[in-house]
Every structure is written in structure tokens, then in C-alpha cells.
Length: 52
Image 1 (cartoon, rainbow, N blue to C red):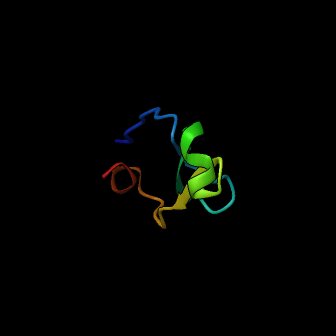
Image 2: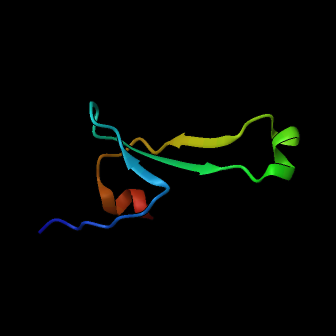
């Protein structure tokens, strides 16, 4: 059985199948962090592990 959950900040790469966590940085923190978007590769193809 496959678990399908639609979470806007969790995306699966079409080539590798790995999941990525990505969030927009709030406007007041952009200068401090130096980015508009925070993104990290989760190194897993398992959706349940990515959700944890």
C-alpha cells in the first residue's frame, strides 16, 4: 500500500526520486539569512521517512 500525502513544502525529485524540504524565508529574515528560500535534500526515496 502506498501512502500519498500532499504537503506543499515536501517535493520529490523526478530524476532521482529523493525528497526535498523547501520553505520560503520570511521577508524580515532574508537579509539575515541571505536567501529567499531554504531548501535541503532529505536523501531518502521513502515518503514515510521524509515526513518524519
